[in-house]
Length: 222
Image (cartoon, rainbow, N blue to C red; front, side, top):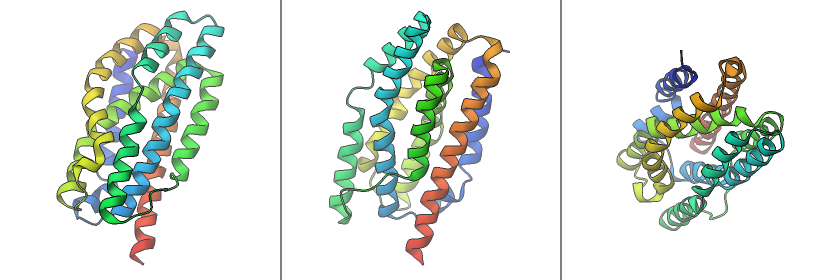
């Protein structure tokens, strides 16, 4: 079985589980507050600000280890990441003005931990970063539009303040096809355990992120 198919199956299963996470269920009931969305956007901003740094690091480590094709892949991805942080910045500004929220919001600790662990992962094995990229893009396409729709229709948070999700979901449709091709071209079947480990790490942190937002929601309700 192609490596990309193995990874796709794992990610699709995670996406089905994610839709049933209590945070997503709360959004469907109209219970997610603008303050929680603000924390969510601050975390997304933190993540997308680090993506170019991680891609550059992965390119450089791959280059030093003689993995020229892998380095070229990361370099190409890096060129397409410019300006994505501005989407999140604009969303946060629009959200804070509409709901009179603080403009400066700390990212969730789960996302800070994810960024830290990804950097360590890349330094050990830049190839293992590729499944994370595929995971982030595929989950955005599978779940992002639903999340935005529920926040807009049920929670009163305008979709216009979530453009960082909507625009990534649109761009990433094409990126998924490119990611599958790159995974099967650049990675060997012997690397599958390490690639699945990256997926497990990504899923664990992302679930913890949703848990953290839900906990904040509960604390505010109390």
